[in-house]
Image (cartoon, rainbow, N blue to C red):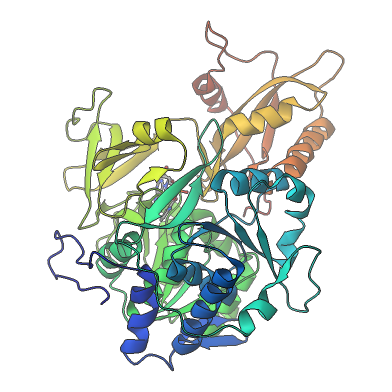
Length: 542
Ligand code: 3UK
């Protein structure tokens, strides 16, 4: 069993009809004799493939013992850690469906995610439990809360993860799932409405690992992957979990925040061969003065960037400083990983690159007809890793997935050499540090402040060409614009929403540009903003 690759890139990945993804990423490594090899390195901890395999089955058995059944969702609110790895594949092995979620959200967000997914179990780490505690009474379907702590001491009504897993058998036969069964979900946000659960199938990870990771990055057993982007993000999940496990390589996990010094320190000590981050992550690393005197990236053969467009200047400065190429590529939660990418030795700085073999792309106009070469249109993609649907969102599913094709919501043009150039979003969504920010959510939060009459939020570039949110605010009578009030509004948003969503700049104006029907014209705010100069602001987003 496992993955038999045909060798011909345009053929579908050859997987059996009865297939559980845990066999490809866990069992195949034991069969290949890698039981004693390091699979996961996390701080001082090192876990072999044999140890990971045992933990995976133990978690699967523990969930089974609690009564978790096939197809039931198991939410993971965990930092990058061995527990994440074991819980993710443990749930899959049982035929249950892990749902990793962003660790930076607010209690209200988790209430929505837990109720929407109807997860019956939640595995949460001690420091993140404070985000769940306030909404526990509102969770309609959650039956088991597994609490991961170093010292023990479990909250009331929760189960001690370690104690529960420790005594389980290290053997669990993989559930008899079909290659098209649900495997895991990932949530993605849109401009309006709640996040959408993208349902990924058992074959999706093998597809991305083969097409992009092996096909473009040429990953192999000797690689050591280090992803600054976390495992809860579709990008990080591939980079640091199912890519390395596909070829029996080693992943280097960092549970803490991706502070640039920590990243350099780990890269120097743990000798990764592949480094993955987002453009803001590379900008933050470049901003460290004299880094090359203290740190070394000698082990790194390739760097990868995704999540938002990589500005040409960052590519060039990075190559100048470290002598390493950054391969920019575009991926999405719905497609699971990267489908258009630059190739080693063939980078076109500023472009997203060429179509990854195994995928197809087309750029179309409003009537869905292909545009002429060099013209801008919407990008559609076809490939075997696209999610099956958005959970309980039939209309959104139909608007996004058109048969074998998926609408990315991105505007692109293709040049004469087949390189794709990003031209912005079709909607008003912003990517900040690789993470989605809905202008509408930020506007609604700002509008709940007593000083604010109304407001409009757009993305604008700092000097490094990276986009951050900016708010245009119309004040209520009796309030006057001031730097102090601007600061107060920023703090107000930061406390209510995930911190990366707050507006970096606030500009007070007399009135917002609106349509006849009263809709904010964000494109007019963008035009107005082009006449402004912004000073670089540093904050925790880097
Ligand atoms: C934007 C990019 C320009 C684009 C992701 C790699 O970002 C990922 O998934 P998301 O669902 O967002 C998808 C959207 O983000 N985008 C991503 N990469 C680029 N825009 N250049 C890029 N290189 O709007 C896209 O539609 O959060 C990235 C792998 C897996 C992923 N899920």
